[in-house]
Length: 212
Image 1 (cartoon, one colour):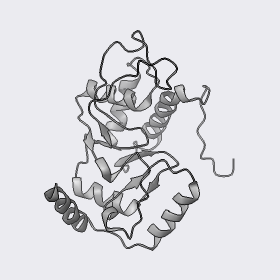
Image 2 (cartoon, helix red, strand yellow):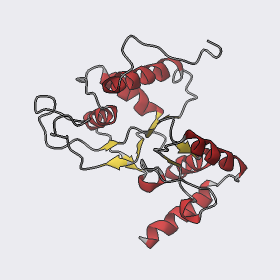
Image 3 (cartoon, one colour):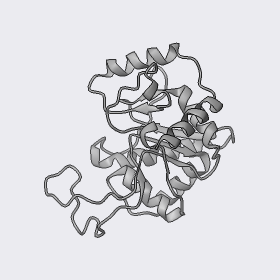
C-alpha cells in the first residue's frame, strides 16, 4: 500500500502456479512498460539471487543483441522426472515426450523487449505447463528463438560471487543462498566496486574462452 508496487491476480500463490505468476508479470510489462519504447530488456530474477548490476550492464553491451534475446543459464538436454512423489514428477499424460526443449533456468532470465511481448502473446495460445522455465522454453521453440547461454556467468547453484575474487570478476549473479544476509553482504561489496566497462568485460570473457 505504501509503494503501490505489488501485482495481484486471481490464483493461489503456490509452486505449481508459478507459470501464472510469470504470465501475469509479462502482461504487466507488455501493457505498462513497452508502450513507451524506452524499455529495452527485462530481467526476471528470484529474490535469493545476488546480482552484480554493473556486470549485467557490461554483459548486455558485450553481447549487443537488442532483439531476439532469451538468455540465462541454459539446459539443453533436460527431461521430465518420472519418479512418483518427486517435486517435478510428470506423468506420460502430463508430458508424453522424453526431453524438454532447451530452456533457461527460471531463477534468472534476461529477455529483450520484443521477446517479452512475443512470449506474452504466445503464452495465451499455449497449453498451461506448471514449470515456468520449461514453459518459456516451449514458447521459445514455437517462436524459433534459440536461448543464449550465460553458463557460469549466471549460475543457478550457490557460488558466492565475491567481487574481489578474480575467478568471479565477470560473474553476473548467483543463486540459492541459505541466508539472505549473505546476499545483502555481497550487494554492499558490489556498491563499493568500480564499474566494469564492456571493453573490460570483453577482454576478460575472451581470455576465459581461450583458456578453455
